[in-house]
Image (cartoon, rainbow, N blue to C red; front, side):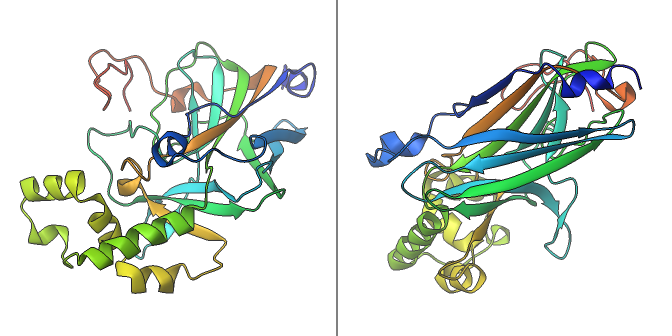
Length: 285
């Protein structure tokens, strides 16, 4: 396939850790210790059928961080189903984005999904985590949250990898929230016990009680995510609470590439489609 050789040649690698500010610092008055975590590409295999990208994440902090390993829809048995990351076009129409991140806008339908989640993996101080992903060629859009934008042509000329992370001990933070909520004496009830208006009030003003109920109280939390757990699952419904919504983002960009696209799998321009943030997406599913 013409142009695939450009994928492995003459690229510019940019390593960033600035997709979102770490809101925890200002809210809790703690300064992160050590240098910022980084993600770096370590390998690239290309043939006529697929491209495989290998990368590593390095925790240069002196404390634990928690890295997003997958985002997914959960089935009726509570199991995650693929895809486990978003693949979509950025707004410039030139950049193909592969994203593992939970605290992002849900663009695919005008309502907040209740059965999506993100899995986070503990990365201790000084540790590295090796990861990879592969794309069949021509590349197709595969989305969990993103709707994306239509491509500007038949090829992407950039590829971006975005991975969310929490710059703190995510499991311990959630455990503390559940513990305090239980000490307050939060009632055990479900959304079916409340009217729609009451449920909105509950979510907006009783955050900790809602977190505790989501995890099944302290006993449910400890049973599912015992002390020493190296991972934790965070429901999407909790992602935007003020004390949970602290996800930062690692990003690495591969420039000067030529990735053939299955353009019929990407959205096409369509006026009048609104995004959940109040703007116009300009595209349809």
